[in-house]
Every structure is written in structure tokens, then in C-alpha cells.
Length: 156
Length: 156
Image (cartoon, rainbow over all chains, first blue to last red; front, side, top):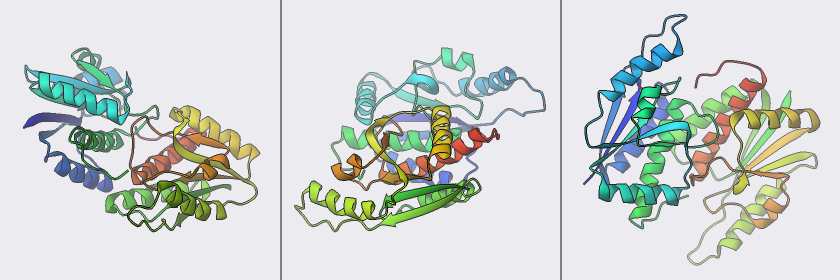
């Protein structure tokens, strides 16, 4: 079975988004072994520079990378796909890669170090989304990708 | 207070998305008088052509339009905005228009007649989204737009 890993910063606070995550994680696990990893957010004191926060969180994220992970980070400057294109991408990677690891940053995004270690960056929308909303959208699109790959019907 | 109307097809079936809608509708109502209208979906029998379904739903939608509504329909071929651009658009319309009416179709989308009667079309993402997910994303972006217009902080 294909392997997915999704690394996010912090727990999901919104109750309905957490339910949505569970819903799509459950569906996704029919198609891929899916690890969901929540790393601790950096403690923010008043005046802590953004770069320090991102550096701390970036280290926690990088620790969860394994040698053969193909890493895709969510980033506003990343590539835009439509659902068919994204499914095609996932299908190709499922042949050549051992595991695809997605990284979703916290409210401030991802450190330059994490982005440098990333194989590619993905943007979900031109709109700014909360990091929690991004998780839901990513899970939904991953699930949709597998239904496309498997030629299954999925309600629009 | 500024007037918003959001017309959607059918009730929201997903429990967590319905909770999300209520959450953002509640927040949105701090900034705008917001009507949420669910029109009945067309009855689908096996073999009913898509155009017939859309025509029936389109009539129910058009009945809810008022003479001075500025109509924005969600459509895959619509315009893409970033959150700041969308907020700028809403701000401009709030000065010149009496009411902005958003239309979100059902699983099959919107009829050509509704799209023809539309002042502009909006695409939320290049990804295909369920029509229920589109509602949540639209509400979240409308709420975000008002926080941007009012220079308020909104967690990313």
C-alpha cells in the first residue's frame, strides 16, 4: 500500500475542522497508509522574531523526515494544480517514490530551511487560508486524487 | 449595514461543514446583514439530462434575485482572486451596490441562464471542490475580507 505522511504544526483547535480531518483521514486510509504527525508549535513570547519561531518549528518538522521521503510543502508561492493534474502527480510519485510527505506550517508558515529541503511546493488556492483550513483542503484533495486514480465516483 | 445574500442549492448534508457554515455565518453577521437561502435541488431520476436538472434549479435560484442585486456566481471558469484583491472588490461593491448576492450551485453546477444573469463569476480554487466545501470556503473568505477591510487581525 502506498505511504503518505502529513506533518502539521500544532493540534487542530477548530472542532468542525478536526471532525473534517478525521472524516477524510478515514477515507484516505482506504487507499494509502497515512501517518498524521502534529509537531509542537514554538512558544511565542511577545517580541519573538518570526524567523526564530519558524526555525524552532522547522527543526521539529525536519526531525520527522526520513531518508526516502519525497517532501511536498504547502506554500503560497507553490505550484497550483487542478484536481486531475494533482491526481496525475500523486500517481506518478506513487510509482517512483517510497513515501510522499506533505508539510503544512503553522500560522506563520514554514522556515526557509524546511522549504529548501522540500522537493516541491504546492499552493492550494490564491486565497489566504488558515493553516487549519489548509489541512482540510489538502486531505480532501488527496482523497479526491485517489478516487480519480481509481476511476471511482466522487460526489462534486 | 451592508447587505449580503448567499443562495445555495440544497441543505448541507455534511455535519462538520454545516457547523463550519454556522460558525462563519455568525462571524459574518457582525459586518453585514446576511441572508442564507437554500433552494430545493431538482429531483433526479435515472437518465434525467443534466441541462434539465440545471434548468429547474436555475429557475428556483433566479426567483430569489431582486432587482438591485449584484450577482456573483461561483464557477470553475470564474475569476481568481487573492484574499486582499477579493476584499478590495467587496469594499468597492459595498459603496456602489445595494446588495451582493452570491450563488453556489449544486453538484452539477449552475445553468447557463443563471450564469448569463450573473454580473461576475468567481473561482475559489483551481481544484475541484464539493459544492458543500465551496460554501465553507466562500464564507471564510467573506469573513476574511471584512477583517481586511476593517484592518482587524485574523489568525492565519
